[in-house]
Length: 522
Image 1: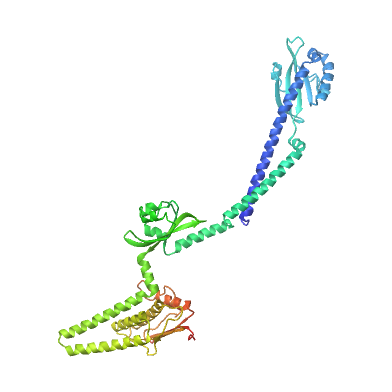
Image 2: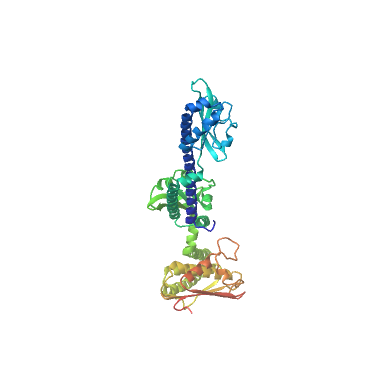
């Protein structure tokens, strides 16, 4: 049965139930017909027995020797004329005067059913004999003077057996049974097809698998998720939503969780809503979506996102964090320079202060001029300027190759994409140099609408892992949290634009990372 389809199972079950009902009904009908026959036979036997009991020849000779010769012929003619199975006449001593089998004439009538008849009461009973069940009528015989009872007449008719009834009504039974089977067959097909449509033509094991898969998916996603019906009763909640809401009961209403705030009011709308919400001293971004089935609202989906985590992820994906860190480093470097200049002025070493200002202005102006002339995007200019400042803080020599230029963004890349790629590659190169006395990082950037080439070199400690492995999401050699994302994002951005990224590294000598995409990709 496990390998049968739902349609076939439903057909077999429905047909079996209908067939069982038909057989049961037929059995009950046969039983009712048999009861009807028995009642009719009883009435018929009683009428015959009463008629025989009124015959004067029988009334006068029962209980006498003459009766053995007179009564049998009279009764046999009546039995054959009325088509009953037997008529037995016996006196008050239970001596038979008639019987279909003449050998039993003069013998004693055995049994207890005649008790009421001997007491001058008519009765009908059912007894089992050699030929099967029979309906028997007992009628007392009163003498001609009607002064006393002289005997009893017993008229018996054999009840028809069930197969005899079926044989007698075989045509009617055949028509009824055939009609019932046809109706059961058609009804079973309709029920099976209807249930199959209701289950979207899916088998039970397919439905179970889909439900389990969907539940696992909903539990695995990294946002809190609730589903409620149109009355606000929760029908699904994943583990992250339970964690956000501090809720671990099995069933409840949405109002019990959100304490009748704007969510309860806006759930009656059929539009999407997006609001922040403070819960347990933590800000969440809440989105509500109506669930529409065949144009009718049957419930709502509520998505919860931790606002802090969402902002961190957004900064990682857009490269804003890298850019902000670079600008912060640049600001810090400027503050250091200003502090140095202010200190020299306070020491009245004005010439040294002026020399430092001219030196810083010259170095800065040279880099700014190079960026203005060759890098035509302000975000990239700001990023490289910030990385230069950060390099000075870390005592790293940061070199922007003279052949660098950025005329336009290659189709498929945005400004944020380049900020993410450059920021992560330069940061990794700088970190690799921190343990060396001489620290050098160089960048070659060449970009047009049709191509992109990036080369980042450092003289750091090198990579002692498989270069492909360090591009995997979550892989990091650092102990602190929040790492293992940057290079994975870089690889995803490059792969999505059919580019390549090559890493060559020698321990304690340095690492070179080359990114290529577009027409110039070799």
